[in-house]
Image 1: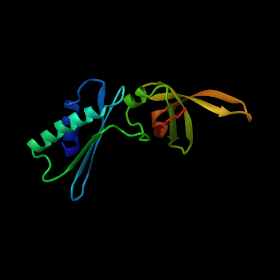
Image 2: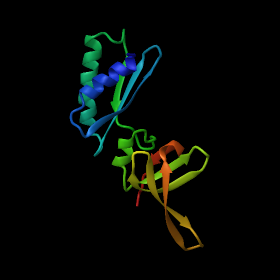
Image 3: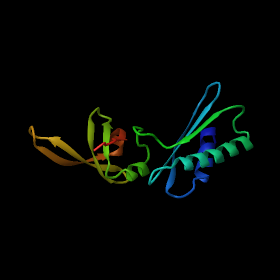
Image 4: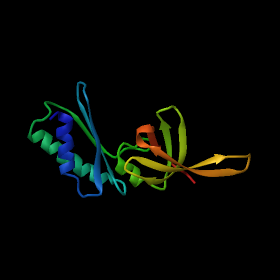
Length: 155
């Protein structure tokens, strides 16, 4: 088991409840290694949750001397504009606007209506005439998605 996997296991074992989940662990090398742990929740993540998890992970890493010397540990939720990576993240964002980049090079913008095991259903608005819009549902298989990001609305 490599270091990222060990830290992921510590994080998963110390999440406060079932509504929280691990998105990913990244470790970047350098003079002072940076350990980045991203968590998310079905209803978002509070900063106090990140702080508690950071203390737990830091405690175990130091007790077991998993990392020699100094390191930076950052526990946070994926920020606005970060791509969705897990099925659970898609489900938590049903009803929100997504920007989906397709592997073939196209792009779709629309409201996430439904998430299946292998695909998503987007409600896409297209302009037919100058002032007329048409709404169309498009089902997209995950394997066709290069990247999907939640779009922030200020309406």
